[in-house]
Each structure stands twice: as structure tokens, then as C-alpha cells.
Image 1 (tube, one colour):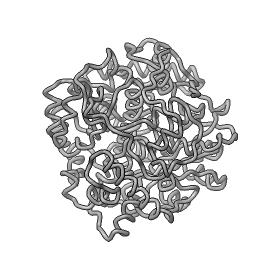
Image 2 (cartoon, chains in turn brown, purple; image 1 turned 135 degrees about the vertical axis):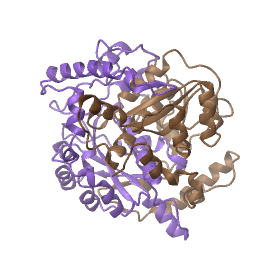
Image 3 (cartoon, helix red, strand yellow; image 1 turned 90 degrees about the vertical axis):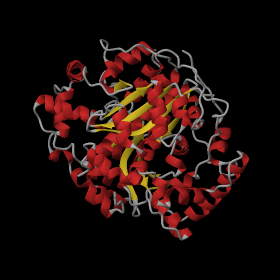
Image 4 (cartoon, chains in turn green, orange; image 1 turned 180 degrees about the horizontal axis):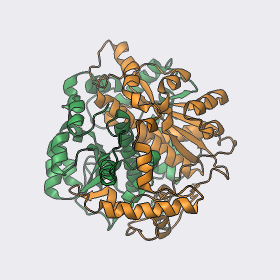
Amino acid sequence: MDIAQPHALPAAEALALRYGADQVPPAGPWNAHIALLLSHRSVRGYQPDALPADTLRTLIAAAQSAATSSNLQTWSVIAVTDPDKKARLATLANHQNHIEQCPLFLVWLADISRNRRLGEQEGVTLETLPYQETFLVAAIDAALAAQNAVVAAESLGLSTVYIGALRNNPTEVAKLVGLPPGAFAVFGLCVGYASAAGAAEVKPRLAQDAVVHHDVYDASREPVLRAAYDARMAAFSLRHGMAFDTWTRRVIGRMGKITAMSGRDKLVATLHAMGFSLR
Amino acid sequence: MDIAQPHALPAAEALALRYGADQVPPAGPWNAHIALLLSHRSVRGYQPDALPADTLRTLIAAAQSAATSSNLQTWSVIAVTDPDKKARLATLANHQNHIEQCPLFLVWLADISRNRRLGEQEGVTLETLPYQETFLVAAIDAALAAQNAVVAAESLGLSTVYIGALRNNPTEVAKLVGLPPGAFAVFGLCVGYASAAGAAEVKPRLAQDAVVHHDVYDASREPVLRAAYDARMAAFSLRHGMAFDTWTRRVIGRMGKITAMSGRDKLVATLHAMGFSLR
């Protein structure tokens, strides 16, 4: 069996990249699968090269192997390879050119329309469809599936990046790929071979102790951990020729003003119009 | 490097388990990572054995390596090992004993409270916090992180099962683990070594063509594919000594009546009370 190990670093090196050399957590058990997961980076530049035959089949088999709530399978995916459609989606998603560049663009759907059709065909009203809970399950199931596809793609030496900006113009996205009521594009995913310009570094994250709590939520060390992370992210941005940035500035920049939502503040009205009552 | 390959089947065998011997899709590229993903099954019975030292560290490193929208990291996790807390959570989640059995129970949080604290400490109002979009991002990010933890756990020979039933009693769950406003337990995850009774088979899914669409959504073959899947699931349930069941009956059973939601029809009111305005 061919075992692809594009970035199989030992634990200490992989953890230093992910947390910073001064914040490496104790290494637990380790193997090539875990090294692959740790090596993830989002890539925003792609070569035009086609994917190996039937790569989509492999990615979908991985995606469908993820857990799904009560086996309801309330997600679907549109595999977009048509150049015109990719170009249009790139424009709709805040002009992200990598959507046009990548050979395969996946539009992941929270999809309760399949279940609705089942009910219609069987003459049964599915009373739970109009609920926030049902939308949440569908969005979570789509995310679990997509993440498995990401791991599979990266194991094959491919790169990916999630595209949340599909939610900037969800109605136009739905029209472009012909979505029925009850199907909503939660995010996109570029898949392809990274270009030299697109190759990115592993991005440091908050220290583990800032996100893990033991038996009870405890944020007492958060200010100290945030200050240390701010320093690491500032160093990271400078090292990679980006404008000086800390995590604190980043969060304020993305979450401070409604204008930063690029229209996503209208999501509830959009979902209502698309057949999700969110009761 | 130690490469754990608990279930590294060749493509044809793994796909036959996942889709049924009569519905095997064309095999695309394949490797041990993909074989691991395909081998997933949810396990509802655990041995009491402790996990290897620092397993939690490995699972969290994998989880934090997943993509997160704009690096906002709007999720957290409570690692519950206290027996009394696990027993109480098992009761709250519809008396699922495996929550009590497993040595590690992870409560995954959509968590915008860390960002809110950041804003408060910096004297900045984060205007985007009360939006449905922000809750959706947090839930998706928690799901991406959790799925990476699942893959890492299974690569170590551990088993898992997601627990959506934490949402049956979210207020009590929040109280038990001391959640601040803006943190919501989206689901739980049992982690441990499967017991003989808990060992489960790979569950067949809908045919790929029922969930993948090419450039445009097309449900025209859905009735045929659903009938074939109903037959496969009926055979699966009989083969495993379960009551006769088709996917159609399952969907109607879980989505037909509000009572099947076990209180989750009140999710919007609960989220409002927990600090998610869902505007």
C-alpha cells in the first residue's frame, strides 16, 4: 500500500511549528497520521494541473465515512470544475482568484432538501425540518464530512483552503449551482496542487491551555496566554513579510464592525428565503 | 516513526463495506490515511482502560491544526474525566452509558466568549458577536476541530462516538461544566478503547451519486438510489441482529415528529439565554 507522507515531521518539530518554539506542549502519542494532521496549512494559490483520475471519488468516500447525526446524511456537495462557474464563484466570494485557479472547487451544502423530498414522496410531513436544530445538524455534518475530505486530499499531496466567503452572496451562489429550497452552501473548498506563490507556512495557534479546560471552564490564564500568542503572531507576520499583526488586532479587525461581515449580517433573512425557518 | 494502521484495508474492500458490494464506486487514489478514514465506525461501548499518557495533548494538537475561519479560533473543549461529571452528563444525554464508561469525554464548544473577553479587556465592542453568522462559524470550527481529533484518536487504535444528545439539556450541561455566556456545547465525543460489546461494523452510506452533484444540483436519480439504499440498510440491520429498518423509515422516525427532538425544538430560546442572539 502506498503511504503518502508529504510532511511527516517528528512530534517536537511539528508541535514547534504549530505552537511556537517557546510554547511546545508535552508530546503525546505520535504517528504518521497525526503528523499529516499537524502539517495542515491553508493554500491560496494553485497550479492548473488536473487531479489524478477519480480523486473526487476518494474524497467523497472519505467525507461520507465521517459520522453523521442519526445517519440522516443532511449534507451534499457540488463538485465544480466548469471554468465559467468557478470564475463566477471567485467573483461572488470577494474575488478570491484561487477559486478560479484550482482544478476542483467543492461547494459543501447543509442539505435538508433530500429529506424533504423523501417526506413528500412518502406522503409524510417531516415536522422537524423548520428548526434551528435541524439546520445546525446539517451544517455540522457538512463540516465533519468536509474535514475528512481535507485530510484525504492532503494525504495525496494536494492542498486545500476553506472559503467562508461563499456566504457573502449565498442567494447568487444558490442560483449558480441550482440549489433547491432546503440546501444552503455553508462553505467552499479549493482542492489542487499548491503553486510556489500559494505555498504557505503552518500557522501558529493559541496555546493548548487557552482552548482546553479540565472538567470545568477556566479562563483565568487567558490574558497571559493571549499576550504570548500576540507576540508569536507578530513575529510570524513579520517573518513572512506580512504587515505587523497580533491576534488581538486580527480579532478586533474581523469581529469589531458589522461592515467586516461583507453582508453576512443578513444570513437569517437569506436562510428564511432559502427554506430554513430556524424556528 | 510508528505508523498505526488499525484497519488498513485495500480500496475495494473498504469501499464495499461503506457502500455495499453492489454499489462500489470506482476507486480513486488510495493510501493508509484514506484507509483509516474509511474504517470509521461509531462505538457505543468502552473498556475502562486509561488512555496513554498525554493522549489529550495529541488530540488537541490535531484539533487545533484544522482550519479555523479567519484564525478566530471560536471554539474550546472541556476534557471531562471526573467520574461524577461523566455520570451526570450520561444522564443528561438520554442515559447513554458509554459517556460514563469512556475514560475521556470531550465537550466541544462553539465559543465566542473568548473573543468577547478580548473585546472587554481591550475596551472594544465586537459588533459581530450577536449574529447567526458568528454562531454558525463557531459551530463549524468546533466540528472541523473535533473531526481532526477523531481521526487522530482512531489512528491510535481508539474509538469514538459523537453525542448530539448534549443538546437535549444544554442549560444543565452548561451549568455542570461552568460555561460562561457565549459558550455552547454543540456536541460531545466519547474517546476510549472499544469493548467487545461496543465494537461496531462500518455503516453503509447513500451511494456517492446521491450526495455529489457536478456543477449543478441534480436530484433526478434520487428515488432509485434511495430504494437501493433502503434495501442495503434493511439487509445491514438484519445481518447485525437489529430490528428491520430502512433509511426511509429511519429518516421519518427521526425527523417526522417534534417529540423525536427530545427538547431540541427549544434550541433558539436556549441559545438566546446563553448569550447567542442569532440576529
